[in-house]
Image 1 (cartoon, rainbow, N blue to C red):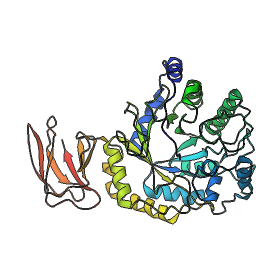
Image 2: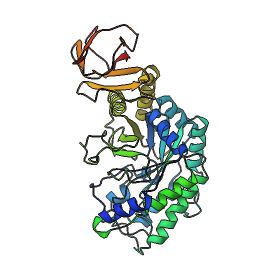
Image 3: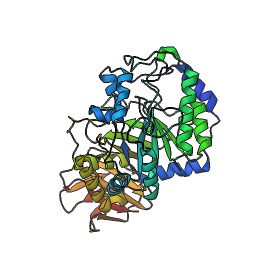
Image 4: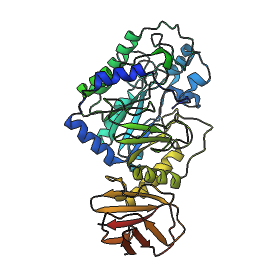
Length: 432
């Protein structure tokens, strides 16, 4: 998704956004959607575009210092003949994921949908001549998979896009015209929000591209207002690595769980909005032919569990191949995650972060009168939980409902496990 250094916008942009949006009040439909989003807990990110043909990720136009006019010729050979929306939908459904986020337009500026505002799209510029976004969203609606759209705020190919920190060597004429580019973006966003049925979220990829010293104003308040007017229930998230701005409905963390920052992109504080962490299945977002460094199924399940324990969703990425197929390894991981969720989804779906904050041994989730203790790394039969203000009436193993001995006093709860925990996630169910 990006090889970028975290930067801050100037105070003037923040001030402008706050003043213009300080009166923003989410609709009841929006608040309902936020809760639904939090209940879902698991989504699939899909990075797909003509960059997939070069097999070196979605930033290849920038990283290879290609000229955009030469890069654009890839469209003439882009024909994902094996793309099958039903097969993609089935794979996502089998994973247990409740929603997708699809890259409708990435930084290279190529639109994966039929747009009347740019011929540089999959219908008008390729021999494929089909609207993948339309086919995929129709299939997702059919299979009750919620639809989120990724949309890039920057463009390495359009001459009217102001010169930013990336894509500087693509050979653009640099006839900067922010008003023209802003209208173009809003026209395309209007298309996405009026031609493809219910869209549960628009996922922007940050405003980090512009020089922070320039005081560049993205006009986010006006754009957010337009989106909320077109679809009042639609959520807005922006991967800008800051606390959410007024008008945003989701706080996004990249490659790290909330409160962590090992990758250097998620050092922001945690706000009050629903949380989402996006992460790759291997190490790349777009298809990279040399990247076979896939995380194990066990590691991905534990990531999902840890996200839920931090009251966050996991948006797990896949990068389809140029021919339109999802890589076999990704299919295998999705299927195995789904099998685990079939048995243990009750402890993830619809939950919120548990009463015990994340520990080295694992996390807790909670729902109704139950607390789920997810033991991920513990080599002892005894486990102490600092639960003092909730009276626990019963403890059992989630997998078979076998009762567990426990004692509780003013210091907390002590579980006497029947065995040393093993497996990807050893779950204890507590009832209040």
